[in-house]
Amino acid sequence: MDRRVVSTVCFVLLLMIATAFAQQNPVAVITELAGDVSYLKDAEAQLWGTAILNMPLRVGNAIRIGKNGHVKLLFESGKLITVQGETTYVVPSDPKTDQSVSTALKNMWVAITGKFKRSYSQDRLDAIPTVRGEGEMTSIGIIVSPRNTKVFSTNPSFIWISNGTQAEFKVTIYQGDRIVWSGVAKGDHLVVPNPEKVFLRGKSYKWTVSCSFGLGVEISHTAEFTIASVEEANMTKAEMMSIENSYPDSPSKYMILGSFFERNGFYADALEYYLEYVRRMNHAHAAVLLLCDFYIEHGVPEMAKQALLNMPHIPNELMNQW
Image (tube, rainbow, N blue to C red; front, top):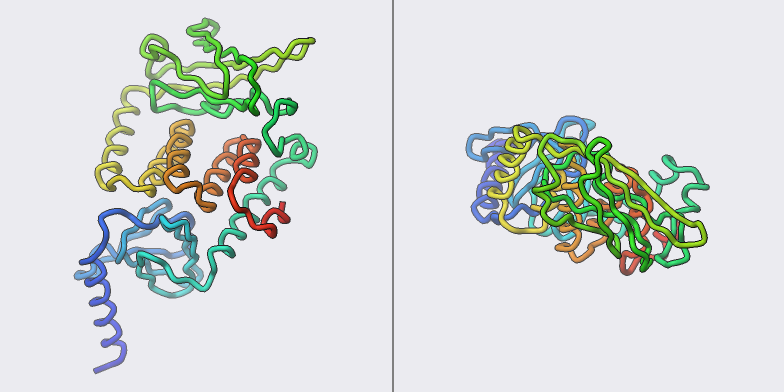
């Protein structure tokens, strides 16, 4: 029998066996792709479809890479691998790769710190606090979320940078020029009580967080957001429920939902899911780095640097890249 035929038969059998024992939960997600990348939709029929960014993958799924194409996969274990060239890759439960986890982590670290250097001046970087402390005034009160975005939830969390100060922050929410809610809080976040009396779907709002430290020192920051309309909310909810029903409770589900909301412009909701993903991944380096990338992309490098420097067990060679 022709060797190519034997190889094809063996490959199909391998896919069918792997699929038969596939886990219900996804074990990996596509975090980057370029060129011709497809996935096997049906092993028996050899039916291939086009792979897309943020696509979840289960054990036994196959990805075919065309010439000059590549794909990066982040596994639930925190491993990040790159598949490139003219090849077909069958997703395992525990990936074996020539690229060590530490090398992948280093590459992600360099990419993210590189974004800092490309996007922000040295003066800006020097102003970003490296550790939390009451004496660091440069970033206190900077708004983290919602920050100039659409919001799916009608009960959003309002988050800002406090750097551990025990001062009280005043939060004021406006619809147009009218104040619809005002209150104070210690710490770095607040949820409005009885939000149904404050927020309406399809309406835009502005919010301000301010803090006075005496001796004429006062900070104030402002951001805007729009609550999704009823029609947009219903469409988004249907897609969200489809994702939740398709993927049982696992860390990767939260990354997929975070990617879904980010892709649709709901950055505040995306952040909630990314934070939950990091928590469920026990702050694995790769998960934290993805969160940092989100912070940088959406204008809060202070949070990214804090998260990077608070990661446990950072190798010295990575710190030296900073």
